[in-house]
Image 1 (tube, rainbow, N blue to C red):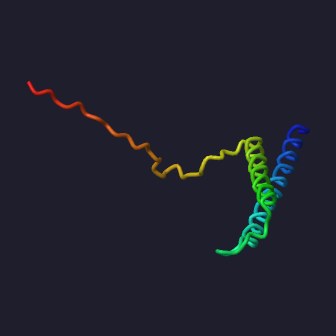
Image 2: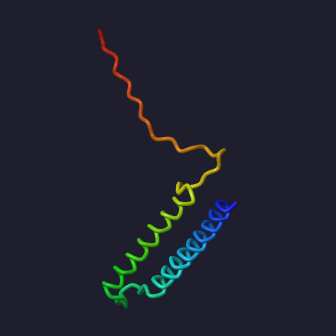
Length: 100
């Protein structure tokens, strides 16, 4: 019972962290969208700030991947089991017939 409770609490904590990360990603993305200059105008953000924002997005992505792994979430693109699966493009070569 104690182990089950620990796992459930741990999952709840991870879920809160995932929601926090999702909200930070969304908020940071909206800030970038709001301050992105129109064509021909100077960007109000310094180069260092732009790099810091990129680093924040990368850090959020890394942590989201760690949480997904901890909860055994498959990060592959979801699909329906009855959907046709993508097949690689395979080209078959035929040997030319020898003329005798």
